[in-house]
Image (cartoon, rainbow, N blue to C red; front, side):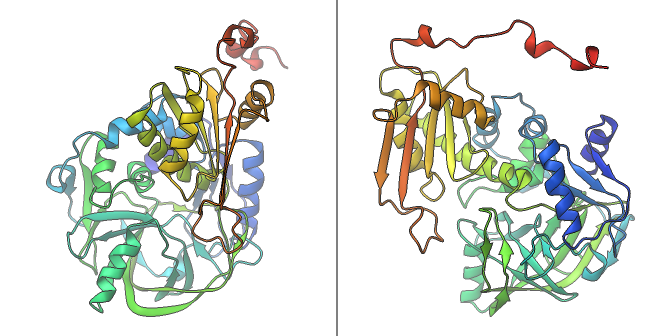
Length: 439
């Protein structure tokens, strides 16, 4: 991650904040405002009450996600499928264990940035923490994103929720009245962050996926107080355990849907050790904004793509931007009614999040919702091209049954009249560099 940050700085693709910034609301306000201007990451060099600089929005660009996975725009899902569905290496093949490095600093939770994001949040939160744990029965490692409310130097309050495998691991340990050892990774290597976004079966080793993305072994180091190893290049590591049969009140918290989740009884994480790399970075992710939504898109879009290509032809790409509650599928139509088949299959691929599905032709940029909506307005008849499926359960947290329905929109060109819907083009427009023209 540090190497990639330095690369972006060298390319002039980093918004850098030199002045002191308050981690309570001000930092989040700058991130929010910056993301309205452009998709550059933001580096805060001077955050009040901590020596660690904070990085945000590093994964908030589809273009950067393509770069990190070695592909080009329009081919992310295809590339991801090739990485995940090949034979994955075993731990012996992908891990390269190192001795404890000299540039590791040991400190306390109170040394880390305590970022409070939203007005009603119950306190400071770790939002980009990736929980590394092993299945108590099989030993298979899992990577899960979980929010953590910072209490003091010895305790975090953690929200565990489906569909993460971590909640299954914790339940297995709790049945035996045992704690589940966990290392929280903040700012791991970019491959590990992306692997944590993967939607894969429980038995798949996500660290092996990280190795596939890297194209080689991942340097690891042993934790200091628990029986786990972590990627050696992780910026901050919090070692500890999720306690069995203990719950405390956590929240409220401004979540990804744009609303607050209220106070709930959630899990307790007991902290043993906090370490970080010298000259390291603390990753602060603003929930419900581009970086968070792009990470969710990796999970849901690739899962939907994988299910679609199993049974349907002509599937080119899938996007869940700007919201994971809808899916956009780009296809090469093969027959009359092809788009409707895609809609129905999309809904069955992930019942929790696919509330709305829009299917478009290959000339539409599915990562630009203005372009997608243009296709809906100019190619779709609302009386014949909409599919409404009532009363189907959706998102697991839905007391008012807002998500108990589905809407499909066929926004492809009318079958047999494709040439009448050829988009107008201005030759050379995409190649113009405005710096050559504007003073």
